[in-house]
Length: 84
Length: 272
Image 1 (cartoon, rainbow over the protein chains, first blue to last red):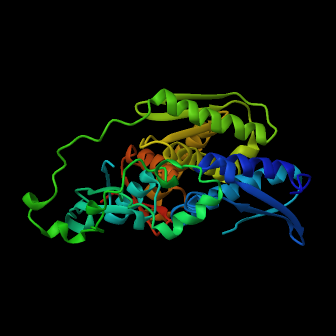
Image 2: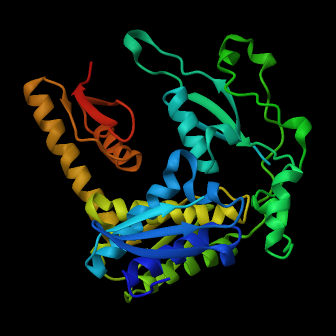
Image 3: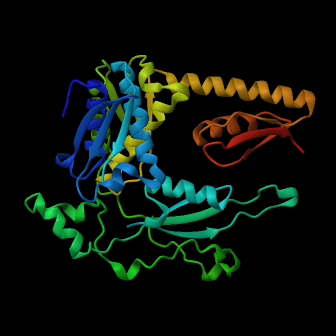
């Protein structure tokens, strides 16, 4: 993983995801660059997908909001995807 | 898993509220409508909708799915990783979804809630510690300086992050609301607690509250002068409550909410 891309956003994303899931050690983040900015792909342990997405995507959208705010510190815009 | 009971003006609102409290999707919850709101003359709400719900007791995962997770060297996860403390009591897990018809059944037939909610499995202090850890880590991840303080208040948690960190508040407090939501999820994953979490950064909430009350007073004045109803901008349920409460204290005006979240908004009109 490229830790140099949007480091604040990555740190915030990792912290939030690990706090929400049952298996923090299984949380992984892969960063890549695209035309729109930085894309962060999150994978979580089996059975934890529902936790990071939440009812009607509420948790996922809260995560995106927080990570988006963190990305402002990095001066980039960030896209967060939860990968199955 | 204990039942949680809430009341609201309408049945859907009550269901939303109770699901928020549980932090799960409709499909993962047993929902029962205990009482529908009684409407008085001209649709004025006289009674509140009462709804109760609980997280559906989960049956153990099918074997097929369990095999996959052995790849992490068969590390044992508590309760199938679901974080829900109940076992696989599947006999109880029949979807008794939305017994909307309950309102038409005689009162005696309705499920009576005799037993008190089970004692939370964690103390307020433990939960406060978890929220503190979550927020402290978040502030650090943002590279900010700020002291986090979490205090249990009447079974809920109030947290404050010191400093004027606009980045944690966001436009109209959206980032702060998101952080609050995530804090709640954080404690619910490891506990049966349904404690609410309220977070403030600096004195943002207080200032927001003051601004909303000022708005309510201003709008009430305009509605009284013109006699024409006014619709406000969409707000979160928390903000709406502040405005409703402020308007309720002002004579001559009445308020209601209109539309569906996230576009639900307050309409202020002359009291009849």
